[in-house]
Length: 429
Image: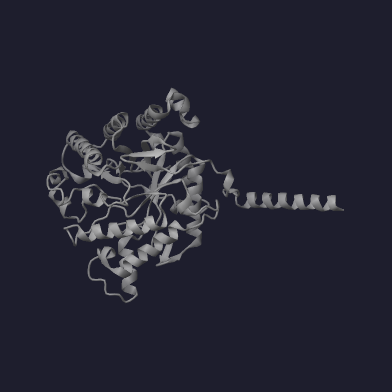
């Protein structure tokens, strides 16, 4: 009798597992089935993993959470992560926000759509399954996907007098409270698939406070600096394990008048951000920089764009080594395909310039810690394509450049024998 009971028990467990697999095929039921992964740490001006230096070759796909909500688009996420891993890329930057509007993660302050949260859970598990780490940006300075304007509108709807500028996002105490509550919910989220809290998830490379912060209502920079300091301390009080960055574009401010001439124009000093000052906040682990030479300096030739781009990259790497004593990660860079006379070879030249700077930094043990291209999409995503987006495997020369950078960075620190299996064939060809 007991033996029969055991048989029925086993059959019941097996049936349950089969049912879960058939109905939730993407779900990894057991946390220990995930690949082993360690947290990325900082040692001075370097990233380190398990005591070894790490230089990043990565990319941006801001749309991962959004495209993971529905089953019929989730294949796009799986494909880009798989292909990114095959190219030897190690970090992908994406949005961990969608405030208000369609498929919003945060529908109202502190009110979340569990369906969308589960999509973000999936992104984390799928990234880790492919050996990738994620930089999660927590809010947008721009209006896309809600941004700071959505927070201001929420406060206004609650009857709070926040003034006439969307920059009240940085100064109003109620709005700052909204943001803190959001961040706390993200950090303490328990992944519905893996069971791991986000703040304990090593597949998250870093948190980014805000994408491209600007506070033009206070060109002195004090408002933004105060906000960065407050929010950085708050995040570190909840999560001391993950790295933290601001999300800056890299423009020099009034605290470094000797560097202002390196900005792309006089307009950049009036944006209320200040690369050196903002990045010196103690809780900020690494500096973030963006680079869009053709958008910042229009109506000049490609050669001039590349010269400026080279100076911009070198200057910020030097800042990391000589002033900040922190890693510098170029978290966005790209070239617009909408500019007159654009050729794919122009993008290749931009990548060669950036990749050369990062490789030289890596060879010398410098602060130029890596770069992330803006941005990758897969086929059939026209509605998500801006003028910088491209499908990397459709352009053989560009694809090869990306793979070569992955190969030489990995072999520099790990040797030929240690290159990951998915990349080994590409590195050998």
